[in-house]
Amino acid sequence: MELGLGSIAFIYDSINNGGFHNSIELLLHSIERTFDFAEKYDIRVCELILDPPEILIHEERQKFIKLCKSYPSIKKQFHAPYAYLSLCAHNPWILDATIECYINSAEICKEIGAQVYTIHPGNAKFLHHSYNGLKNRLIDSVNVLLGKIKDLDLITCLENMPQMAGFFLNHKEIGKFFTEINRNDVYFAWDTGHTYFCNDHIDLLWEKLHARIKNIHLVEHFENALDIHPILGKGKVDFNKIFELANQYGYKGALVMELHKVEDLPESLEFVRNFF
Image 1 (tube, rainbow, N blue to C red):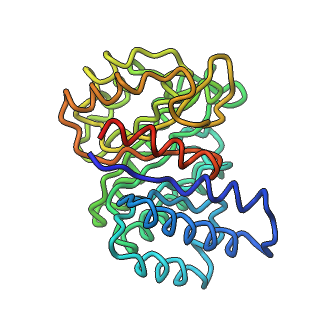
Image 2 (tube, one colour):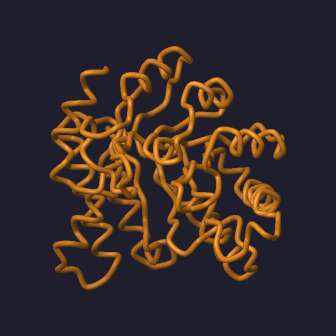
């Protein structure tokens, strides 16, 4: 297992502090701060997200690639953009845009030397459950996406979602997806806070899905709270159990601290390092 750091805390911090002319400046600054924090605290894995994803289709894309390559000692993972996107959308324009964005994301993932690539399945919006087709739409979309990026040789992971997403919430639903898609080139990114939010059973989740788990987001959660990603160890998530199960099943991937506030990182890091 390797301890990792998500860039999202630095993105939120840059948004809150302002002073940037556009999203590209903001993202480049945030990612550089992510790398600098990782080096300072001897964290060897960083998971990067480009959201909003304007930089993916802009000439400044090469600046992002150069920045990533300037930190060769840090292993990179990539988290695809997710705002306004959905692989289970019944709106064909949104679905096509999502797939195109995720193809571009996969290409830049390869360019920065990242192998683990995490994507969100999407949200169940207006009347979608009445179509009884969310899962089938997701299966079709993932099949299309994987066909387009198969030559990139990535470890593509779908992440479980928080309760308000209404979809891809628990081990039964997620397990059914993996059974029915019947592919060995798609995996699972497990968000610990989302599982607590959905009141899922983590022993059963690991029993059924351990072979698919290739990425873990360490996320805390407070009872009856929104998905705010607070300081690790201060809420209701049973991290002792999480590390016990990861060891029991021989998990070899990254455990990425995914917080929303930079100031919460040092205390969270101290807490998590007690398990390594």
